[in-house]
Amino acid sequence: MRRILCAALVLAGLSTVAAGLTMAASSAPSAGPTSASDPVRETAPLRTLVLRCGRLLDVRTGALKEGAWVIVTGDRIERVLDRGARIPDGAQIHDLSAYTVLPGLIDAHTHTFLQPGDYDVQLLKQSLPRRTLQAAHSARALLLAGFTAIRDLETEGALFGDADLRDAIADGITPGPRMQVSTRALSTTGNYALLGYAPGVAIPKGVQIADGPWEIRKAVREQIEGGADWIKFYADYRKFQPTGEIIDLRVTMTQEEMDALVDEASRRHRPVAAHCYGDEAARAAVRAGVRSVEHGLFLDETTLKMMLDKGVYYCPTLTAYQTSFDETPTAAWKKVVDGHRETFQRALRMKLKIASGSDAGDFPPGDAARELGLMVEAGMPALKAIQAATLVGADLLGWQDRIGAVEPGKLADIIAVEGNPLADISSLRRVRFVMKGGEVYRTP
Ligand SMILES: [Zn+2]
Image (cartoon, rainbow, N blue to C red; front, side, top):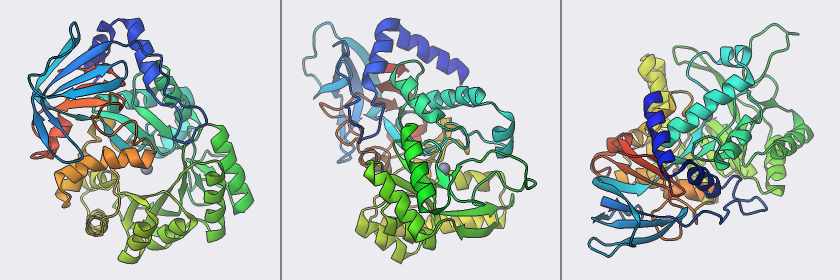
């Protein structure tokens, strides 16, 4: 991975280092959809690049256009031309004729600050600078795996580092996807790790702990001041045994607390993401007015109908639990994975808005596209899975006018993969070209 990374950076540098940095800086929205100033600056040099596509996937219809040309000027897609059309004189051409070209993917649930392995060790023994460097490495890995935008749902004890990473990427300091971030996330006393240490010993927590409507409102205000685009909270919490048994699954907040959290966030135009495993938490979160339900392991039809009626997005993160089952194939983990798949299939039948989010951080970020394969294995048509990671993801982020499709006027976030992802979804794990905002980060 390190070797590939270096190659990609050299390639990006070929188009002149200075131009590369200004391009990367100019093209990335650095704040959420509701920030006061428009973060898409219009200062990019108007260099024209042409992508010669083997086939171009229209993610709205599933049509594959053979031999299309995509004209990129500055950080935007200018035109899409048919095979044989005249292309601009003197434009630099990237030959992707052996590949399928499609919009950059969106992972709507990542943790760049989290690594696989012992959670307590990361919080107790790794410094914040060390964790931030690790997060930058994960962000690069996600970009090179084809993810040109992510929603990073809490730093797991690394405070507001995700806001800094988002801005450093937008400023061209380090390569990575466009990011929307949630900073610290929220839960209530006794309802988040680190847990189990002797009373009186000061230990860090993976989230900000707040109790009661006013403490929660203050925490929301602090997180927004610290750069949060989203507010994320734990509507329920559980302990997992290493063997996969879930013990003590409990709702963390009263309805009054959840209502206060969402009300405070919406006063500042910040959407809310709720971690929910079960029906009781998810129903309370939906009543409070959240924009997305994360994981949703065990949701029945009534809960899903409430989500459907209120337009709440479902972000299942199948990969996280499948990875746990792969590592520890016990009956208990199988029960989790099977129950989760049944919820996913119910949501699919009921036509909920399903966004693709992997929970990368629980597993190496280079594997994030596995989520699309698992959704297809569970019965989602390949085109729908690709839409979950493009069009639906862009809608969830409020960036539907900027990203999610290869269309004139959109930001030039474009990838190319080996094979045909409609016929074989695993081709999305064979990304050979990555462009973000008109800047090339990976070539075949
Ligand atoms: Zn997560």
